[in-house]
Length: 82
Image (tube, rainbow, N blue to C red; front, side):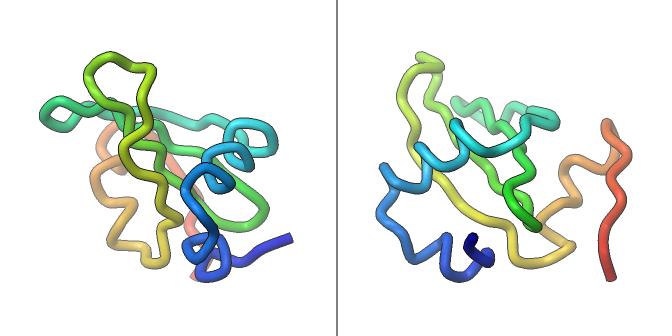
């Protein structure tokens, strides 16, 4: 099991594989040309940024602050550990 900082240090392909195989999909949002999926993995949140073709992953990142969840708070109710 990883924490968010360890996860962010993994190669992007390994990150994406972990999220898609072991993560729990929660929600998505659209930003520009990207669809951003939010997942719960282990004990942290992860974003997968898909390009407009919805097949290519452009970015994988574990969220390390509560502020990073703000874009989701208007459309989803999340319990945030403090």
